[in-house]
Image 1 (cartoon, rainbow, N blue to C red):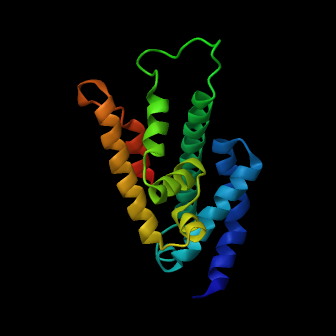
Image 2 (image 1 turned 90 degrees about the horizontal axis):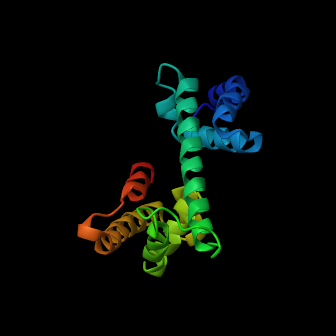
Length: 179
């Protein structure tokens, strides 16, 4: 590969993309990390990116998607942690939402160890599949398989405990869409 082309794209676009992503993250450090991750993805797919009409737009789209995914995962993780440490003097959550996050945590806890580890690292710690694979010492395909099996198991577990077999699968569907 011709790395000079990629370096030129990076140098010409990096600052502009950080400013764009900053509008989503409101955190300069996070925006820089997101743009760097997007450029890593572009570098890995350099042959494809070189053929698109506007490579900077491609990287920008990836960066914005990464930023949105991180925000969703951060919000989910924060909700789960807050629910886990509920103050008994605080008012109970609305009835339709009561216990859903606890049920989700219980569903995660019930997963086999390897699936649970993949779910926690990928969805709660917000690590990309490649990093989860590196940290767990398995292939990326194995991580993806574990995540898929975990989502299926969690969906079934949540359906079993929801009235009339209807589970709040919005979080699981989001995970499938972005995992």
